[in-house]
Image (tube, rainbow, N blue to C red; front, side):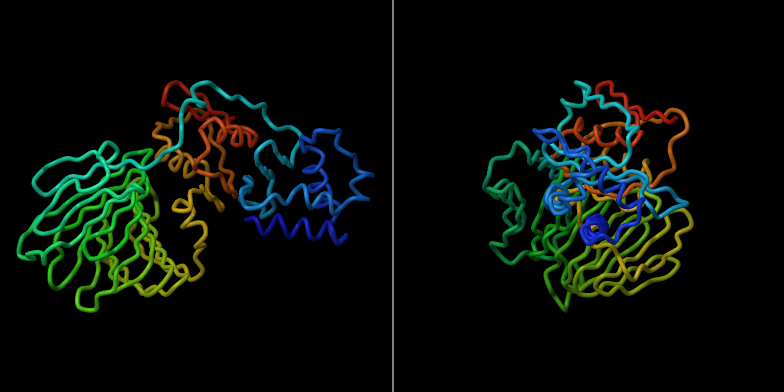
Length: 372
């Protein structure tokens, strides 16, 4: 996403832009909120390197573009950094920073742990250090807010019982399982796992989205079961997006090898590949060139969009900011490309969306998206 903008700027600096592309870059520059009056086209022509410097502010910039189905060219590109907006079109909708939106903050480390005996522990309130123990395994909350399972004695694997860690909307958490596997849970996600893994396998159940770094164990394969599929590994790094309100369940492999199985078939993944399971017809397909940066953006504290429609974007926002979304009127079918930091408050996010003709009204924690 950022590469496309940089390519356009490189073309501008080298003098190889089409007239339309030149207009785009100059429009960006003309809307920079500089302390002094921004130079006009004649000055820009004599200072192309300055344009590059002003537009290349680093990876922390925000970019949002609406891309129509019938064209790969962006109809709107918006770059935002502290004190900086770069807008491709002149008729942007006015900003409406509502008090309600300002008060809705991004999510953070929040989760609830339910032990096998039914004990419920709110990890937000729990103090650092040991919070429970089960069959020789100590459960502790680390200083960085992560949950850890530390084996003090060899656990009795004949003892059955599962723990469940659940993040709410507006929450995320990291847990290290008894076998050393590290799991990052996105918002509105539930992970169920035995506090002592069996001798022949390591089986966990997932609803939502999580990134796994599985500890290697050739004797006990690691399996992740979701509502519609099972992912089997020996030791690897991968991400599973299996929210029940998504149209497609995605398993993306970063390192190692995994096998994704469904009642209708299976597929083996290699690094950089992704399985796609259609939630409606349960058709399983393979994407050999997965966008790893996009799939891992949430773990890196970023919203990343690449030809995502508005409803898909709003589902992500709903989970992270713990808000409900309703729609009125005809909602745009445009596709969006860009990045927004997940540590932005909701008002900042919707300033950007409204510049792209997305009108949002907020009452409490209910957002109404109005089409036109």
